[in-house]
Length: 194
Image (cartoon, rainbow, N blue to C red; front, side, top):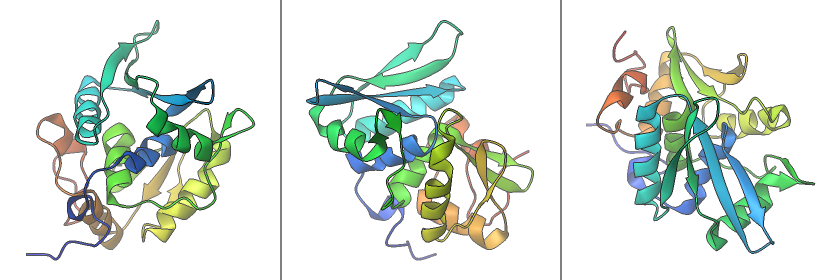
């Protein structure tokens, strides 16, 4: 049996700071009167909505499922005071901005995989925010500091190689039950199913 990494999602308790993983991709924070903030996260499939809602509930954060005018599903939190520090870290002059001291552990990476992770052939792609290209370099650097050097591929970061894919799988832990498994990184570095 493999030893868990100190930074893996399964070795640490879920916490609100893990939401940084959702901000690495398409998550957005909005502030209200400098007293609270709300997370909004568009998601491409319903299974992601279910999985993200469950993961946030584990962190004590209730969400509401959403659907916009274009039919895009997603989740949204209420305005919460405990999300204000995250909004302060990720906002500069009203724009989304990745903080220079960004650190990604297993919990943050797990949420990122739930929201925007997918296989790209034999590589794994972590989606980025198409509306915030200025965040890409900082997020990529933080991913590299987590032992997962990646290359920019369109609007995502591509992780290649058996060892790196195994490290990603180790950090994010086991897939939640349901449709997530076929999209989940595998410890062996090999895609679970085609």
